[in-house]
Image (cartoon, rainbow, N blue to C red; front, side, top):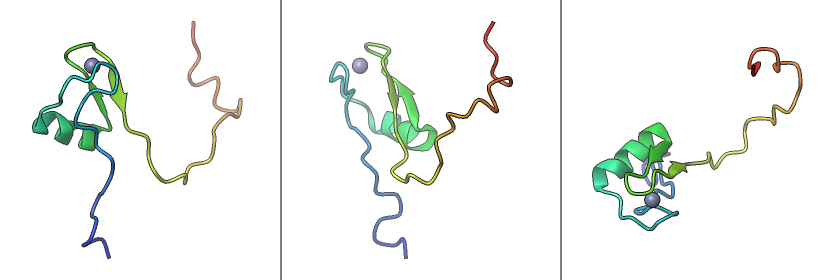
Length: 69
Ligand SMILES: [Zn+2]
C-alpha cells in the first residue's frame, strides 16, 4: 500500500539555516541518513521521524550507559 507514497517525506531542497541549495545527491543522502551537514554553514540538517512511535526516553535507567565525563 505504499505505491502512492513510498517515503513521501519532506526532504528539504535547501539548508534551513543558510538557504544554501542542496544538490539532488545531498537530498538522497539526507533521505537515507536522516542527517546531513550543510557544506556552506556546517549546519546539521536532521530529519525527524514523522511517526511518534517511539516513547520518550527521559528515564534515568539508561543514563549510566551514556555517561559523560
Ligand atoms: Zn547551511
